[in-house]
Amino acid sequence: QVQLVESGGGLVQPGGSLRLSCAASGSITRINAMAWYRQAPGKQRELVALITSGGSINYADSVKGRFTISRDNAKNSVYLQMNSLKPEDTAVYYCTAHVVTGILRSGDYWGQGTQVTVSS
Image 1: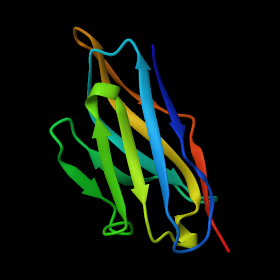
Image 2: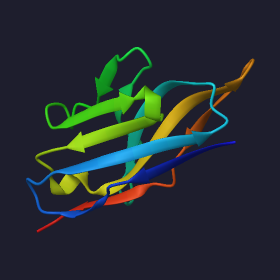
Image 3: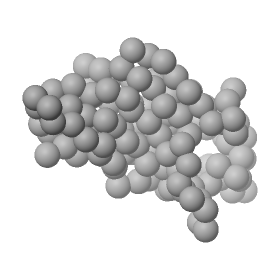
Image 4: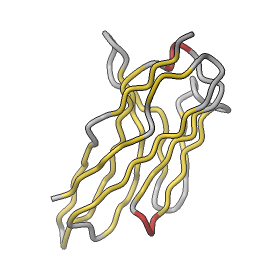
């Protein structure tokens, strides 16, 4: 069993910054890709940023230059630094990880989500 716990969401004014954290725990052999998704009310969940175990990174076009994803493999954690926040960044943010839990056993795990609200 693997658990992902996010933290760091909240209310921020436009132009402000927030840093999201996500820590994985449980029966972890190795973590491959880790990512952040978000879902705004009435919209589909969308990929925000992804980082592989080798450090390759992809961002959604809407956040390039404003958000930075990073990870700490020793802590089984992934982070999302969000700068120059806009009202359209308001959403529930979820972290996800592809976790190897044993020989020929792996799966995608999700956190419970953390609310980010950008409003004046």
